[in-house]
Length: 147
Image (cartoon, rainbow, N blue to C red; front, side, top):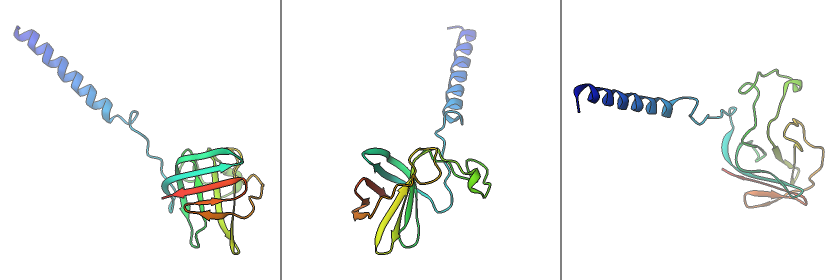
């Protein structure tokens, strides 16, 4: 092989290697890391309401003192992180399902949104929930959280 052909081959390999490295670390190819509000963590969740599975798998969650908790589907957006925080309910938005489970006297209760765009509960009373391992179960609902 002549010196000139060898130089071209070496230059071609160098360019190919440089492009491979550039694309492998390029932000457009990197998996985005979704930021969470303070106090939230990633876990695994299950939310089934009236036989409809709304969240199954990766989720974000927050546990409050006393054991009350909320879960959010993996595509949820948060004020002050994903969009400006207006400090008013009018500026809230939702892009995934969510649920809240809370202590109500001596029993547990909860609610969730009925559509991914809803920022308010669907208004349906779940009634009393009882704990089964990592899940809280009612007549037509099952909410589970694994940290």
